[in-house]
Image (tube, rainbow, N blue to C red; front, side, top):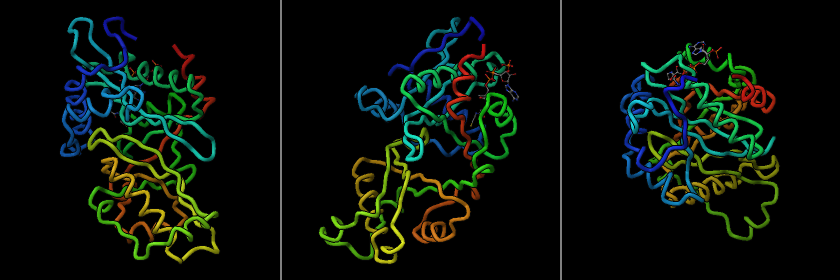
Length: 280
Ligand SMILES: CC(C)(COP(=O)(O)OP(=O)(O)OC[C@H]1O[C@@H](n2cnc3c(N)ncnc32)[C@H](O)[C@@H]1OP(=O)(O)O)[C@@H](O)C(=O)NCCC(=O)NCCS
């Protein structure tokens, strides 16, 4: 990496510069109206309580202009019920004049080092299908397109759908206590456009218990928790062959952001992560 730049964890006073770069990335992604949060939200969610921060952020600063940020990488830790701890890279962005100096790679390597220290076994992120130059960069570093290799479709519920969701039938506590073969596993995530969000990792009702409103009740419970926590999005992925789920989620107002906006899921697995941090 070019010695004129330093890479470091973001501090509270970086937030307005990070927001400037978030807007640059949204412009580049042809969604200029995407970012909706202000610096106070970024500060509150990332720095007010270090133990319970909603995200982590690394920044690249020019030595010549201290305080002026030229690149950032924002990420958070997630969980897979298949493999355990994972990390999700929400944004990786280098301002145009500072590209091809090794900053993008160094920021991502630092994220991956941090994640390996926490025993994460996957680094995941999404990229727009037309963003060929970034896709090439990601492939070069060992990431794989899981939308094409495994057939994942990205879905999202927005704030109004979450707030208005009501199960048609509320189960009694007894019925919920007996509901051993049904579960919904989730964790908190972060959107650099809208702030706090929740990700539904697994949502399962055993075949015998289906069509009794149990799935709707589980989802209602999650969305209540999420809305109470001021989450404004619920993200999740569904396999493209799972037509019943895709229909269910579409009926309740979820958006298929893979087909509507072109987001593809990418993943670097543990071996690739370990190789990646060795590269100079
Ligand atoms: C993608 C991006 C983060 C790469 O950052 P960068 O600082 O320009 O890239 P680096 O200088 O760290 O490049 C590291 C390596 O990748 C290669 N590389 C960089 N961009 C590449 C591209 N578009 N195609 C192929 N290889 C590329 C470099 O040649 C270099 O190879 P080397 O290690 O063998 O020398 C940056 O171009 C960017 O911010 N793009 C716009 C925003 C974006 O698309 N972000 C991702 C959203 S999902």
